[in-house]
Amino acid sequence: MANKVKYFFVASGTDEAMNAASMSEVEPPRQRQVIQSVARASRILLAVARSAHGLTATEVAAGVGLAMPTAYHLLATLEEEKLLSKESGKRYTLGPSAIDIANSPGLRVRVDAKHRQALRRLAETTRETAYLTGWFRGEIRILATVEGSQAVRVAGLEVGFTGDVHARASGKVLLAFAEEEQRSSILDNHEYTRFTPMTVSDRAGLEAQMAEIRRTGILYDRGEYREDVRSLSAPIRSDGRVVAALAVTVPSSRYERTEPALVEALLSAVTFAQQ
Image (tube, rainbow, N blue to C red; front, side, top):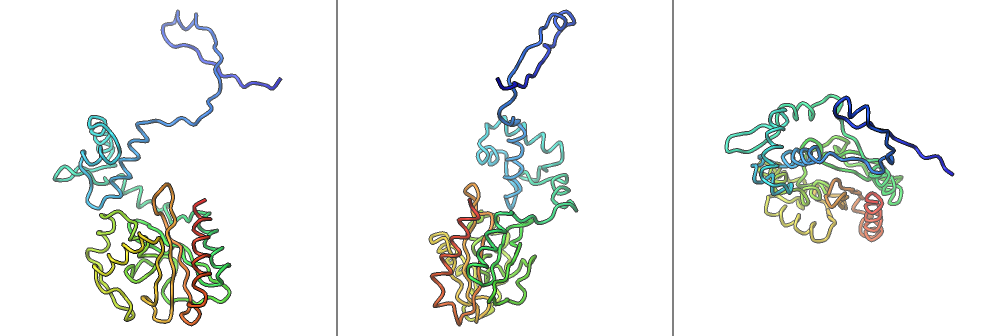
């Protein structure tokens, strides 16, 4: 007979009750215990962090799925701990303690291991340069790159680069699936530099492209960032949310004959990243 791990507890109360209490056997916990109030407070912090201009208590309750009294109680606690601040108009924004966490010297970009493997597979399969792009501190940033055996390197597109999102394939993919407030925080004052005759030159044109990305799930860049370079990009999802994008760049001279194989390799890498 297999050994059984045993746990014991003594009932609390008066001295007499404690002396009379018998040792009792309980089964070891089989599931990780989740403290509901902590989980709810965490969801509130994430909701506020993802909003461009903060949230009201009513918006928090509706977005997180809480009764108003519960939302008020948690918001007051988070405000007391300086994780949230209450601004004019009764909107809650991130407080100084939350900002201290965000600016911690120990916080750096961490690339999901599965995403990095998918990136490497994409570069090896296509033999072209592949890019992994994601959100970091409110910006769209190149997180990693891998060069293929016949790759073309696009000058300036290095790890850490955050600019020109209107003209870069993976930047458009992440913008297309971002929350409206998050998207507007980047595009409201964005400068639409024209790098080639194909570059989108205004917000309306970009919005039309993003609508097409949401419809098809893939972006075909036919020379918007560099006239002699073509790109393909597709989103990586986690729990229903787009968290990153994979992209591959190809010289225009060999793009047309390899496009079907490139699309297949890109979508296969995305599927692998999401497993």
